[in-house]
Image 1 (cartoon, one colour):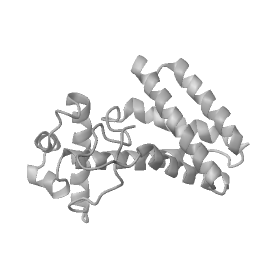
Image 2 (cartoon, helix red, strand yellow; image 1 turned 120 degrees about the vertical axis):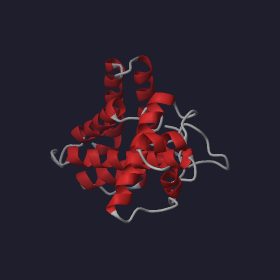
Image 3 (cartoon, one colour; image 1 turned 90 degrees about the vertical axis):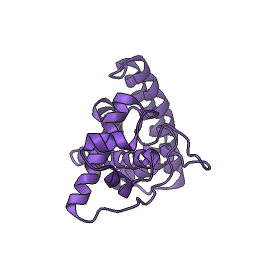
Length: 206
């Protein structure tokens, strides 16, 4: 995951449903075009054309394509957390291993099916023009620590936060490797990733 700054206010926050729907169409178009043209060739004009909205509508929300990609990354993170919550609702609260599996399975599902996710998952593929960006893996780890703690009835102390962050960093690198060798994710590397997550997190969750 490439660096993405903390959530920034859009130029305009949608209040009416019609504006929210237009924003969703813009982000959907952005995601589709990322798959088709890549980030470098992405343009606000092309997004507006694909979304079927005037170019001014895009600029009401975003100053440039990077701001649009940042919003897409944060939408992806929100949807990832929501998907995990749906999976956890069907799991018992007494066993942590199925919970860790659910966290990985939801990421794999998004990796395989969500438009634009290969380039903009929870981060953007280009550094900011001014200053360092926040680490998206840290943002992911914070959300996962909250979800795990709530589901398992744990206190999110420093040891758990650190362990989840390390697991996220290691898993991120391994999943990148799995999808580099196989568009659907090399099953052998995915299996090794799952085993690594289970073995490592057992230190703090058993």
